[in-house]
Image (cartoon, rainbow, N blue to C red):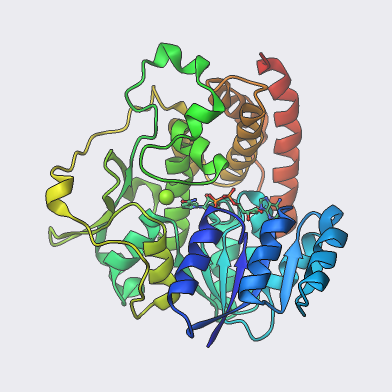
Length: 391
Ligand code: NAD
Ligand code: MG
């Protein structure tokens, strides 16, 4: 049985991962689970999967969690704090690590998994945005494997085939599809009135709140462009964003001979998760095959960078390189958090990010210490900037 660590097991991707594990009984042994603070759900998961280790990022719930483990008669060892997440990510005897923590909090555990030579199933796109070269360098130097979980990047990975590294030279373009989110056709003049609940109501995907807001602003697609540059080692001008409201074509690769390959499927994260868990074999995912007759039609269009200023800012940051993607990511996390806490309007998100980017001096960001310092500084600036955008 393959040992599997699920970082962020209580989130949307974490739950889908455990569902795929459940459907493939006898194939995976869940070695460790982690969560930020939802110790009740983590305890339920420990009852079912009996991992050797369970980590809570927030230590204030450790005592209650340990008491729950004891009452259930489980031998799972409970640990807490940021270092505990890295401990789980590097756990001996576990070959696979699902990196499904949301945001910059996922960076150090994801890097720890790469350093420990694991098969890293990368959902935490923020790690790739903040520290792409560091992550791919650690994967290379420590014999790890990186398989994308983001549906678009998993689609590209599948289109590149087993010889991905060899064929990338033949790739003319990578086309990342984007649903356009819940506000694709909404009157832009009314966007300042949208509520967190409306922004989180994605038409096709059921996801965590942060990525749902990122999808509504299309920052998600901007982060994904940067993620694709990192994962597939292609320059940003060979990546194109295409609006595709049905979320059936998950992405496409165009080769120099005129061939375009795509991966299609129902919008359900269990498909890319099962692909990455089984690769190079295929596993049951619980997802129905696509019914093309029911889908009927597939639409494609160009993204509107005026309606979606966050996508414009992300593409600019991707072209600038250096510290810009780190600043973009940090400012976005802070702005989205403020929007979800009903402190600023939806339309302030792009304004906050643009202001923080304008205030940041271009710095180099080659090592981890510099990356964390740029991230920290950008969050500090964002906190001040958010004050100017409050209701
Ligand atoms: P989520 O909010 O549903 O879950 C996040 C998980 O991370 C939870 O288990 C939570 O406890 C944990 N977590 C949150 N903050 C933490 C912290 N500070 N320290 C430690 N753990 C923390 O998010 P999600 O939708 O599952 O997304 C997870 C990641 O996967 C994100 O990076 C997202 O961009 C990416 N992703 C998600 C989807 C999707 O369909 N949900 C699709 C593609 C990519
Ligand atoms: Mg995606």
